[in-house]
Length: 313
Image 1: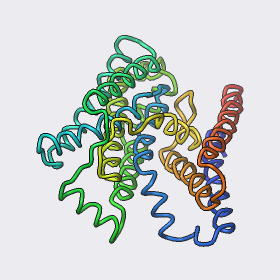
Image 2: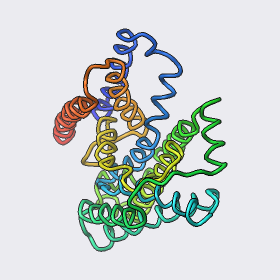
Image 3: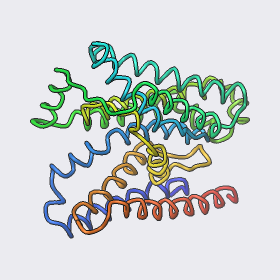
């Protein structure tokens, strides 16, 4: 077994232990409605984390994803409720804006050689500030399309969960079966080596952050569907949860090693911890942060040991 596979195996084991333990401990935990809620409640975090996976695989970081969710969410609400635009038009507009914003940050990172942390930190403040300028309070979205989506979610299968699963499948394909995905792994493994291989490193970086922008903007769309509202403060600190899900999912922070399916499991682990606290009933929801922090620390230490063993090999 290759050492690089250890994190994803650890992630799978942790999820199985958590889910099995909760199913044994709490009546009705192991049920289809609870699992659907697990997917539905964490769908917008999942989309942001899927985009973040590619960024971290490349050796970068994106701190703007939470702010992008708030910006996208409130922009859709303003366009629909205050300007009378149909969601059929408003949603593509914000998705395009998110993609362009991500590509812009990627271009600055790639061509100006500025650290991703600094560029995306600026993006985080810019997007959150713009969202707050647009509206300082939550704005409900009363539109037939949103009502129809809500009815479908209640009567059949949560639409947000369907989108989450679909994005997981698409990004899984992109990561492992396309030249762009292979290029992402190569850039994360070493930019100099990628250049020697003839890969367009700068272009790949721009595409990576454009994809992250698209995923986080899509997460904002899911948030607006989930709540039937727009909120400028939506997604506050969600970038930290997304990073945690990616790392717990087995993607190395140094880049070059990781799995989209691991991120999917990482999101489910975070959601399972929160669901367990709800079933437990007596502990504050803030304990979820404590447990997630401890789990994240364990995975970071595990990654360090794996990196050292790979370097010695």
